[in-house]
Length: 294
Length: 188
Ligand code: SF4
Ligand code: SF4
Image (cartoon, rainbow over all chains, first blue to last red; front, side, top):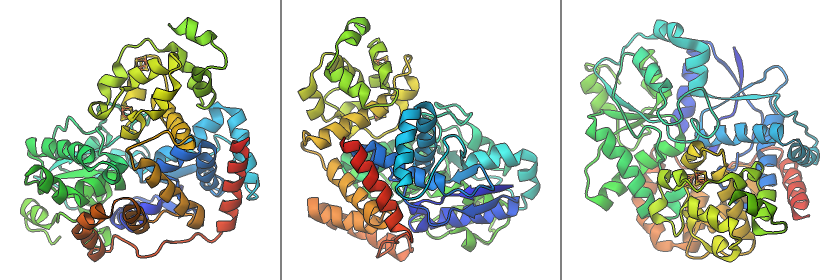
């Protein structure tokens, strides 16, 4: 199946592990990803704080650049995903606003027909389109014995439904079970990682991060598996700062779900971006997966 | 409450509704407090979302636009998702952010500076730039905080997770034409 692919700025660098593992896993599952040529930044939450029409026009340029051969667009970043799907929905629900967005696009010689593109998150594509049988078929190295806390964050499950529970989503739980992992109950699985708050108020952000790490530790998880580059950065990159701030000793690897899929599929960990995480995953993987060469 | 506030023309309530797609739901608020009770940032806020909505209804424009509520919001959408009246609360908070920035009514927060640095990068390159954000923004606003980030920045570098220069999209002029048009239309 063919999908247009919007990596987003984080996946260029900070979350290159996510980008690499998405591409590797997609390849193996027969998901054909065609990167949008010359895509631009989605503006994150920042553009909406300054100018809504400009925010939507910036986002809609990407929708307009999706090639006519496909009407499916995949975004692995939660913020990009929400911005893309929200802009399309705003244009559909409010035709006058949609016209204004198109007036902006026209200044760049582009046009977008509201509703033409269906925006999907990578998790939904794998769980809903590929499905259990095809995923299980590819597992050559089951993640048996590995205790994982599935972390969904906010913007994929809320406010626009992705056919999962916005309070207690389950899709990633299912997927990780298909891989043979032990999925722990994780009550805060859809709580907030703080988003950009690390840049604005560290005490406020660190408390949100601490709760997520604490809860995973309380449920004796070996690692947290996430689906958004911002969540990964906050939980992984800031983990030592959070420890310093609260006097805690968290040492939880934060991996992308596509990296864990790749491991279960037997893909070379190097190709999946292992080693880019700040809190290294190697010791726990070696201990739990029976000395597999990771 | 809903009925009588809906009648007021030319009020702050009207203004907020006008500026928010779906904002007309505001008049249906029943002050149940589900939004405030769901908010992970409630403790940091001068006024919870429920209170803020009551203040909008009361046309308390000055106090609303100067409130820290918008800047403590982390866009988790719990309030929006749980509101029994389907009020797009998070989007209303974005509207209030825009108004507060446009009129420079905010205080004691770096959030508007971060938003400006971020969107300036998008306008100029078409991509965001984490290192530029970290340095440009922090050096401008809070140099000490940047120094504290030191070791973390280094770890990110050594793992190849931080670029030194921004990527520029090929058709940057096209994007800029689109953005300029949007700015022109929204200034009307
Ligand atoms: S949850 Fe909705 S109805 Fe209840 S107080 Fe908040 S905005 Fe009003
Ligand atoms: S979206 Fe903002 S206001 Fe609403 S619950 Fe989340 S942090 Fe609070």
